[in-house]
Length: 91
Image (cartoon, rainbow, N blue to C red; front, side):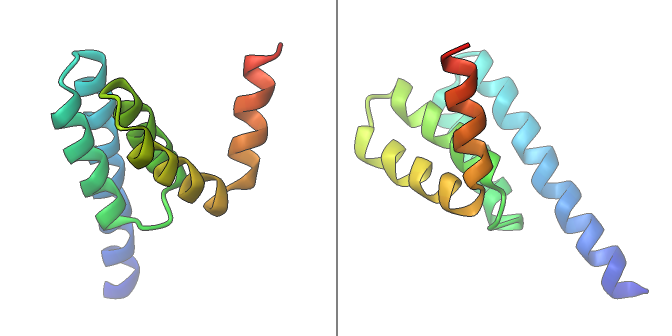
């Protein structure tokens, strides 16, 4: 059962950093947000939403190349994310 516990703990750490990143982004601490989203990705490399939010934050810092790279990875991991975002923009 140790293996399952480790996976759950790792996923929880990814969610914790993702949440912290969202808070920092809302507080205009963009560098802190990027750092936390990066940590979330470290704990869960398949965390599409963390790539997407990090891309959004990079856009706020005019890092268009970095943002595009994160968006590409987010949509590669979860194509439904791209559909959802496009749907929200046009409805």
